[in-house]
Image 1 (cartoon, rainbow, N blue to C red):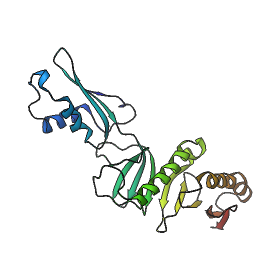
Image 2 (spheres, rainbow, N blue to C red; image 1 turned 60 degrees about the vertical axis):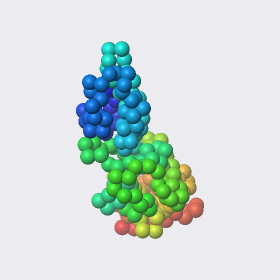
Image 3 (cartoon, rainbow, N blue to C red; image 1 turned 180 degrees about the horizontal axis):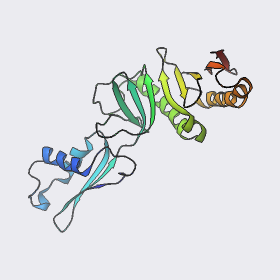
Image 4 (tube, rainbow, N blue to C red; image 1 turned 120 degrees about the vertical axis):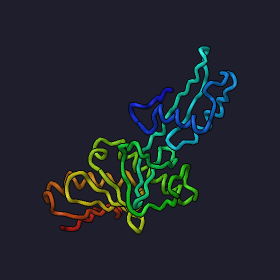
Length: 220
């Protein structure tokens, strides 16, 4: 068993893959090698939430070989006690009990309704649009050395607006809906370069980025 990306993610182990096949493809050990249904092996493994794709093949020494590529989450959504990951393509899959990926966390009033253990894309068009917008926000943050290091949490309010929580400082940035991403981060940068240097740490509690051409700051 080969897990191609085991150095970056550890959602599943070779022992778990053996256990899955033992449970769901009973009796394959000891079967003539040319009788093993390789497509069935792949279907069993590909149905697991943390597995993106598996490839099964046999060799002349009568060995069954399995190559597995794991899903790579880019964001973790935490909705109360219920949480789930999303990959870059907008595919949702559950948190794993054995491993937690270090990705951006979005909590609060997540407008996606899924049952615990759900695997797949959001069911409604509205949810898929919102998720695509959020993934755009995450891509922007992850693509920037400045914001990747500075933004540690994103909270979704009851009105759907985002609040950005930085690693340092007491400011909370009111981002509004997950749109006009580049413009809003540009204004956040202007706050750090100009307003913060002028007023000093701790002067403002809320920095509102929602208004076109304006940065509205509220004192502590």
